[in-house]
Amino acid sequence: MINLSVNIKGIELNYPIYITNNDLSELKNAVADEINHKNYIVVFSEKVYKLYSKILDFPKEKTLVLKDGEAEKSPKNYFKILDFALKNKLKREDSIIAIGGGVIGDVTGFAASTYMRGINFVQIPTTLLAATDSSVGGKVAINTKYGKNLIGAFYQPKAVFINTNFLKTLDEKQYKSGLGEVLKYGFIEKSCRPNNEAHLINFLSEHYEKILSRDFLTLMDLIKMCIELKIAVVEQDEKENGLRKILNYGHTYGHAVETITGYKRYTHGQCVVEGICIALKFAQSLNLIDKEYKFLCEDLIKKFGYEPLPKFNKEKIIEIMTSDKKATDEYIKYILPNSYATVTEHCFTPDELKEMI
Image (cartoon, rainbow, N blue to C red; front, side, top):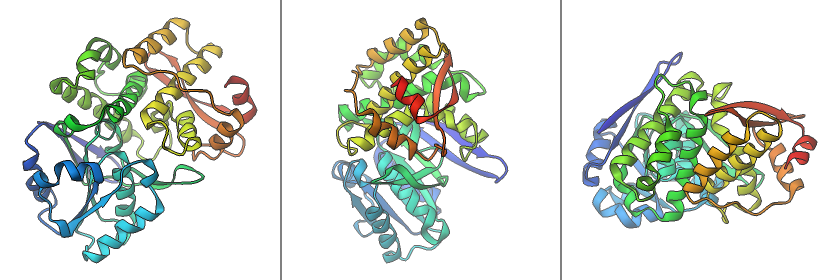
């Protein structure tokens, strides 16, 4: 087992992250110990529930199952979770547990942040994307027809339990989606200002075959590296006032693609990788990076099997970007690379972006 922790100064908040490949039958008792055996409800992803409900053995009367897919990160499901918590008479010292991917973690976390003005929240990520990124850091949200994650909060979990055994049954499409966020961490590593550099780009380049074949010892190391980078950023900037904005590398364009395609055609990771490729082109055209670094990044992306997405209507993409929560009245904020594993924030007007896209 690998034990990490997030320690946010100023508010004296800290919580543990457990990374393990222990038998999943042990998970229920480990969570019960963490929440001091108080009352709880569990919000499951439908796919995960079908695969693991028997081995995890949570009581049916405490279990709420939600469908899978980005469209399920909705106001309807947010209120469904709150209603279920009230039905189970949860108090503020009790807990809401999320078992699933980023969608389940986000909508459940947002419900937890508002139930009785905040209740304990436990993350149990079951996808590579959630395990390497979204389960840690406290960003919780729901989507609307106007864009992704526009209603949300910063609300840190009480604990995170990452078990690589869940990845055995993860379908290839969702596994590849998680690798999109993993690549992002490689390309922003130096900007995260970690205590110890992981040299993630080198690790990804050297071990991509083991990663693609889901070698679990390699995955344990990979998850640890990504989570340590996320921790480094969150501890320095919990609420995205500065440094944390670098985690949006690839996301401004990526979120616009997800919105324009109704969250159904492409996975989050595919869209993030496409956003990274667009950012590389922007950066080279602005002489922020040279062609050698652009080639190195694109070559690594190809090693993981990503293909370019089709082009989308410029005007619609820009319109969605202007609604992004990071945008201002005049500018769209964009994270671009400026050297090896380093990125910075830039501001562009909608007309300037139209010229570059």
